Length: 105
Image 1 (tube, rainbow, N blue to C red):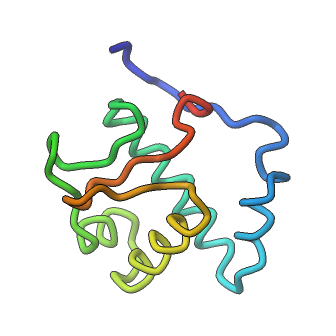
Image 2: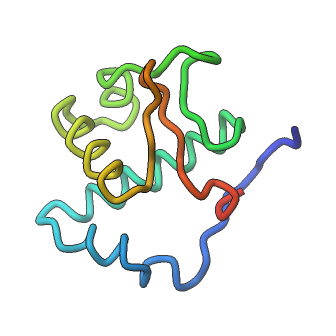
């Protein structure tokens, strides 16, 4: 697996319907920043868009909240919203995977 030093976004990424929907929320700026931080974290882990502490062990909601300096409630709400928008999936253990990861890597 090659080391990632950067992630990529298409210049029209924020024009996509999922991002348009996300911008309708009153805290859209925080949601967008959190989304980009998740993508960057997945890039650091560099395992097909998965986010975990170590393989098969999910990052706790509180750990994400501390890392990104937000409230636990915000993290859970954001992750639920991202699941609804089919931006992420969480497996039965709670490991997060960014969908369409190949678009970013």
